Length: 224
Image (cartoon, rainbow, N blue to C red):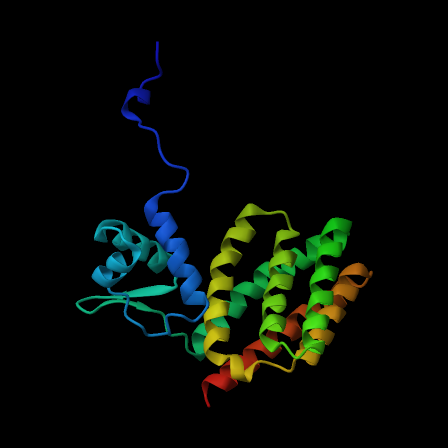
């Protein structure tokens, strides 16, 4: 005898068309292909992607829920424009997540996670030496992603995914004001050393200082 309700279910794809479209659009938004304030026009997107408007509409709503798009009544759906208050709020949320992740890794000293962070820092240093500031910025975000992953908390990682996308939007439009690569390398080398060390308060202070510096740079850039 089958369980009640099972007859009402039908097989599902591992990844639906709206999810695929959302992934594609998210990638382009955070890469700067769609500038902040750009209108996302359903018929044009559907034609370009070779799908009907229904999946595109659902994909756009997913990105609205993630905070990457905003739905303005009677006007349409637009890529978010992040002002100084938004930047501060993004980094307030990042601070809560990253301090917890740093605390957990500092206490566990899980070598695999520390080795991953060391690899990212070395890639960042090499990129800085080549003068590749965009790759330095990418490694900056990779370091913080790896730090949060080190907490081994699916919920922290899930929350951080949206914050990371919003951070990418900030950087895409303000790349010319990004800190000097050598300075970023030095800051991340310090964070790694403190994660490997014994002084937890010094680590948390360094996380605060690093994120505070980013907020100052990004908000100052937005005023220029």
